[in-house]
Amino acid sequence: SRFHFHDQLGCSGDMAAEIIAGLTARSRYLSARFLYDQQGAALFEAITDLPEYYLPRMERSIIAGHCNEISALIGPGRVLIEPGSGNCSKVEWMLEALRPAAYVPVDVTREQLTLSAQRLVARYPWLEVHAICADFGSDIRLPGSLADRPRLLFFPGSTIGNFTPAEAIAFLARMRQLCGEHGALLIGVDLYKNEDLLNAAYNDSAGITAQFNLNVLKHVNEVAGGNFECDRFRHVAFFNDSESRVEMHLESCVDQTVTVGDHQLVFRQGDRIHTENSYKYTIAGFRAVAEAAGFVARHTWCDENGWFSVHLLEH
Ligand code: AVJ
Image (tube, rainbow, N blue to C red; front, side, top):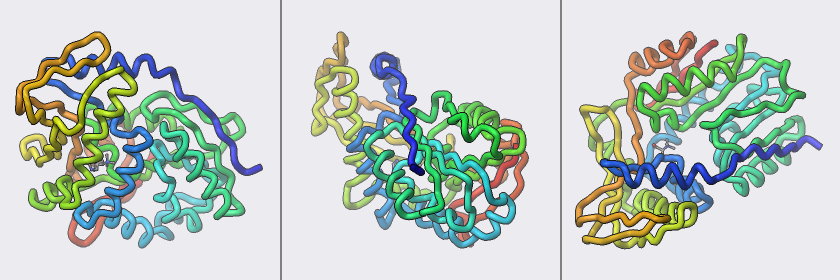
């Protein structure tokens, strides 16, 4: 069979501890990865269809529009690894042109990973797929049968924006190890732009981003044993110019006490939990981050308005 499934998901005990640590910190926060339970993954997919959320459309037109040029620089027969593959649809923008030896999607959401990987196997009769169920922040172990082939890592969607620049350098340095000596990384990075466009992209008029943000409380209730009530919080998102990032927060609508595990959390009306950062780079700023991680910037593609960029980085 051309479909292989590797379960590398660690125990979720540390997840509860990490949630509690963030919620009891002086400035409360939750790691953005907790946004992606099954419901969160579905809500994020709905976000990618929103008119205000320009990122996927820009990235798609850049990658699909240059897939032959990208493929010529990379060459066929690579093991194509996608950390945080979600619905595995982004890779389809270049799959036929790239002709990889195998595709390795890596994602925590087991159901979505299985269904979308199997969809690709059915759609591309020449493609071998090794799905790895894991948090892409943890160490990914490649199946032994793929070990000797040259690798291409694919990290689209501007997911790198969830890290601070210092965290991004550390993460990219690990990705550089994973891609190996003759390896490369193709990465999508959202760019610094007009504040109104950024604020609209994270405050859509249909309220899907608000649902996506509030859903993290349900996930926290399940993982860490909490009694958050979603309708007692509201979605807040804004561009923080001095940090060059969009921030998402959940703001308490009332004075309330919430129980999570053994902890009583007291919220005054207006108190916030910081749930996500989404950094916006200049092209030069991102290249500096990539180079600090040891990569060599080979090529950058970008749309004519300079809204989004795709970088090919070499080991
Ligand atoms: C998938 C992390 C790139 O930061 O734009 C979308 C997630 N958050 N709307 C982003 C997200 C709010 C998204 N990333």
